[in-house]
Image (cartoon, rainbow, N blue to C red):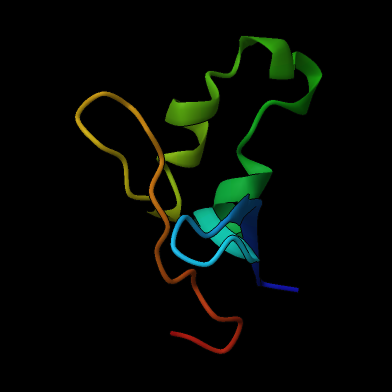
Length: 78
């Protein structure tokens, strides 16, 4: 495998309808080369934000740091 897409979501209630929905909050496309350069012996020393920043990353946050929903990467997306 050369590339992997990982997306994280939160199940939240739609404030207009009360129906539970899946809100994607983070999506990252990991490439094999970048992933292999992570020091797995010392993951406790890797800052998650900095670590994910080396890959193609999608997220949407307010100025106060609150995640807001967006469209994640799709597996076949270039």
